[in-house]
Structure formats: C-alpha cells, structure tokens
Image (cartoon, rainbow, N blue to C red; front, top):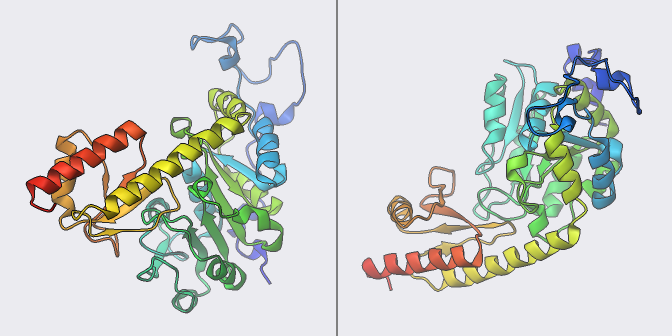
Length: 355
C-alpha cells in the first residue's frame, strides 16, 4: 500500500509555509494596507498590477476543474509544467541519496531537475517501438527510487505509451508515478487525470503551452490527490503565477470552441505532413505521432538541419537522443509554413538526387 508520508522528505512534513498577506485575508475591502503594495497604482499600465495575485489561482482552478473533470483541490498550477517537475523532485528526493527513473528518449527537464537537486538518475530505455518495458523497469527500482517519469504522448517520439503498461506501472511502482501529458489534447485518448481517485501515487502533468497556444504565459498544471497538491502548495513560491497570466488564462479557458477549431487544423495538417513525408525518398522513416509534431529519420540529420536553417526553417535535431539517430523533430506549423517546409525538403531531395 502506498503511503505518501513515507515518501515526503521528513523536514517537509512539518514545514510551515510562508504566510502571505493574501493568505491571511480573503474577501473584499475598500482600503488595503496589509501587503506593502504601492497604493498609488502601477507604472505597468493599470492599477490592477499594483496588487499581488491570488496565490492559489482559485478562479482558474474552478474553470479547470469543470473542464478536466477533477476537483479544484486536485489541481496545482505552476510556472509551466517545469515548476511542478522541480517541486516534485524537491518534495520526495533527498539530495545525494535518492534517485528518479527515466525512460529515454524523453523530455529533458526531468534529468535537469534531478541534476539541480543532486538526485541520481536511473535509465531504462524505451523499446524499438518507443514503449516502456515493464520487467526492466521493475528490475531497476529500489528503496531509493522515488519518482518514475512517463511522458505520454512522448517527447521527442510523439507516440502514446500503451495504457495497459502504464496502468501496470502505476499499480506496481512503490513511489510517485508522474504521467506527463503535455500533448494529450492532440489525441483521442482519455487523460489519466480521470483516474486520480484510483491511484494515490499518480500525478498527471498538463500544460497550456501546446494546444492552447499560450507558451509565452507559462502556465502548467499538476493533477493529483489533495494530499499531494497540499504539499506542493506548501513548498511553492507564494505568488508563482502573476496577475496578467491569471487574467489571460481565465479568459482563454472560456474559449473551448476556438480550441476545438485550432486542434482540428493542427491534426489535419499533421496528417497531411505525415502523408507527404512518407512519399519523400529523402525521409527513411516517419514515426507515428499523437502530438503536434512528427519525428522523422533521414540519411544525414545534421546536413538536412543546416539546409533547412539556410531556408529559414528551424526544426529540432534529436539525433543525440537514444534510439533517435539521424532524427529530426518537426512541429506542425500553419498550412503556409508547412508548404514552405515541404518545398524545401523537395528541393533538397532534388539537389541530392534523392527524388
């Protein structure tokens, strides 16, 4: 049986978090003299910005709870998903003693956060289909392994991890299982956030940076048990989400119809690119994608990457990642941008006599 208290770093169990002025007073008043703000207003263009933001983003959480089918107390909001990743490592991993388990190729911030906190890393590579191998993962876990990171759809490969294997890992792993769903909006697959009540060790990460088009606002979400969320709220910075972000995100969450329209275009363009890539002799392999990008294998990724740069097209060279030799990760752009990409690829192929 999973017991959260046995995994929290002991000194954090009784931590008394910083109590901000906005923690101590809720409601409306006519005169605020409690937070040492500048009551004359703001040089940033509006009086609203001279006040500290809601430290727990209650308005956004209410909207997200309805949208995602969870309860507000199951939601943590961070400065991008990266903040939640960092806080989870900080919450349960003792520096110099504990470790996290990664399944490369995968998102690089798990490793960066572990390294920042001097937490060891165990690695179990995904198989040739970029799927987790349950038996090898089970063999790697020991009493110091505190977090298993699963990215689904995976970055940089683009594929969903098999749900049966993910469920088996959540049930068997004696520690926190983090399922990073940054790209879940581009799939028809249900989110693991719908099953939080079944698994007390499950944390699901999502973001507004991808499908919602708000990467510049930096807002990520963690969905978990109220107990886990409570600890994350204890150790986060008091005002980690600024007023402007909260205002703009709150307004955007009311625009689900526009979101559906954008998703339709992206998914259609993804299908168009996949079909076009498959017909290009230049591209040796097109990997299945459930994300807003496609991973492709080419004869010489470095050469093609440089050529595309010269044509004003920036893609991501993932050749150094395990299992991704000579692979480029290509984000789905606008129809016009995708046309330019395909024209560039065809020109390169013709010049290299690959047509």
